[in-house]
Length: 280
Image 1 (cartoon, rainbow, N blue to C red):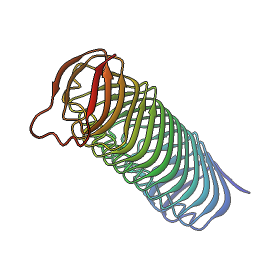
Image 2 (spheres, helix red, strand yellow):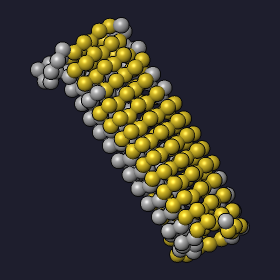
Image 3 (cartoon, helix red, strand yellow):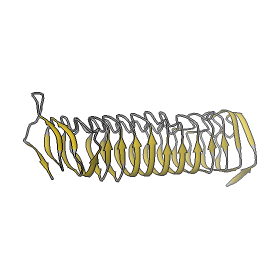
Image 4 (tube, rainbow, N blue to C red):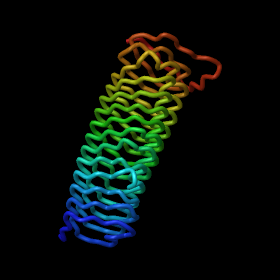
């Protein structure tokens, strides 16, 4: 592997088409597509300031690096990335990628990040300003995750999340095959229109959670007091360990909790089978 150390580059495509290249303490200044159409790239202790540095790259590692705001849309259309101990201040990262492993990464401007990405493995990652995060992505595994940003994980498939704190209005809309363990989920309209959403030992807050769901399962979850009008038009099997402020027009299944402030079954109910609502 060729080593480039303590160098600076700028302009258009300075390392275009490189293969089996290690960058150590290299700065990529303003310009575009510094490492486009590359393979077998390792970057350590590098700074990326120019736009689109890693496009159409197959097989690359990024360790202890910095992407400044100027390095926008830095990783698109690429495969087989490992990123560790890295600060990503650039917006709109990770688009249409396959094979992403992130460890100890911070993304303070994560709006419109991780779109159309597949086979994603994330651990010890914190994201802020993460509106529209993870759109149309699949095969995602996440551990020790902290997120602030709305409309996240929409239309995702095959997701497993452990030990997360997620602040997101309209999270997990239209998802399929999502399981979340031991996490906090804060935000309005959680999980609407999802299929096969399973929540295990999660704490949930926000109005009108888990409506219009199919094959929804809750195992030993907690609801905050603002979780009102829950489960409208949902097929649900839920065991909740705290009182539920209100339940409205569930469609099918069973709901168990220590107490219910209000159970609303009105003329708009679409229940097709008897729904069991019982105190534990």
